[in-house]
Image (cartoon, rainbow, N blue to C red; front, side, top):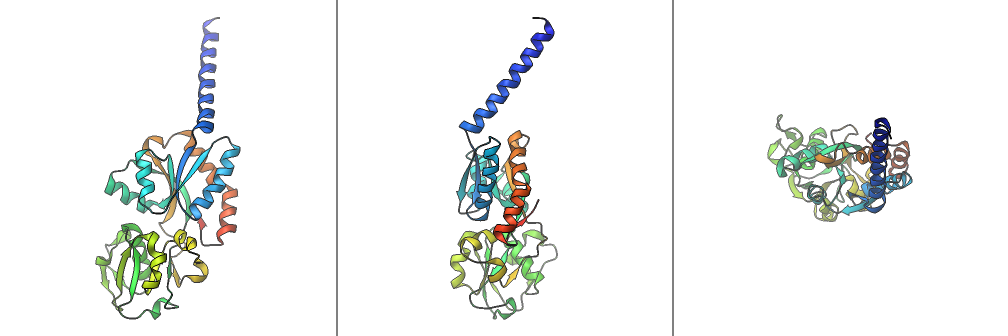
Length: 266
């Protein structure tokens, strides 16, 4: 064999080895994708079907809170997660030092305000107990909605991470009760109103378009994302999973299945 033949043979062997390794990974070691129960899990079940046809196997791991999926991803127990928006990830990275990055955009869940005691925000009585998520980004998100609806006024510099301490005008003297987002639907009976993330609302049998007494505007900074460890961001499987997620098939599924409660953000 001449030098050219040896080089070509070596290149072919390397290519074959890489191909076999990829196939073995897809078949023998599924990618673990963390999601929260509800729409994120439902959507990824459809993504899984697309990826199965392409020979890439994934295992969907469901969580019931917003803290553990990032902890599990950072620890290497997951390969990716799909459940949060960028402001929340940014805060988690800042607070916990995670080496986790945005891989791509997924869907948008306009947060809704629900009540079993009033039919409109304006009907809230003085001193009403109002439930908001206790994580900085979602809590701030709700306060911005209330400001947009004219119930409160925030410090101009508060931004996306506003807290009840940033409220400078509160005519109804609303009492903000900070709770874990996943607990909010179960706490609704004890509150005058509460902001509930769409995935938890749907899981609790609430219909955002019908049951919410107010809702966040469709355009917001809170489009959800798929996240991966920094070291994995350029790996081919990331692009493959995103391509399947951001397909027309998934766009149609989201529109049909959730009827506007969840919006494609890609």
